Length: 217
Ligand SMILES: [Zn+2]
Ligand SMILES: [Zn+2]
Image 1 (cartoon, rainbow, N blue to C red):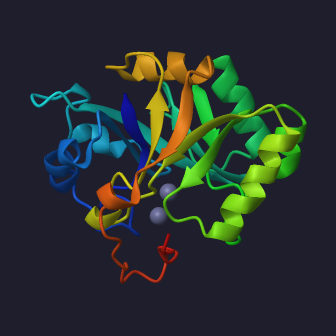
Image 2: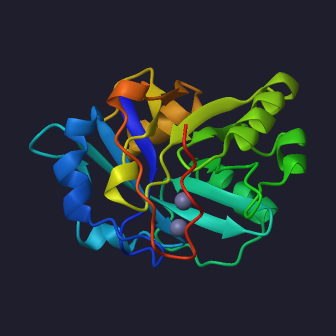
């Protein structure tokens, strides 16, 4: 099953992508599931029915949590989570609640993930492919995979419809709920997957200055 693990709705102030656009286009982009990961909030659950939709798309609500040690895609019971935890405390809490935390775009110049957290074994789930990564960032991540026993994921980090599904995560077990996604991620039953050039949607520049540019290729 192919999931886009990292999608921002317009609830994220930096995104202009609506829930209706995501739900209306995900299947046509070849996706079996989308994870809605707004910045520091799971509020999108108030406007979307989580789980399998009528067209077979699986919608899962997570969030992208910001720490000084990097951004983490969180999946599990984190609706009550207040912003402001440091990375170590966040990862300990995620483990205590048996959730899943994916270090997002670790090599991004503007919001890097701290390599020591990976070196210390505090997280092994890493977003090895991100639709907004530059080729240089992807090259640095490839070096990480030679150094650490990582479990890789991928996500578009879409902030606009053009980006949705550009990069995904191949799940190696059936997933139709948040619980099943957490189970698959915790067991490492996933790998990042970049769409073939011919089936990738055209990228579009986001007018919001907070959004990093979408690199070509
Ligand atoms: Zn954003
Ligand atoms: Zn993001």
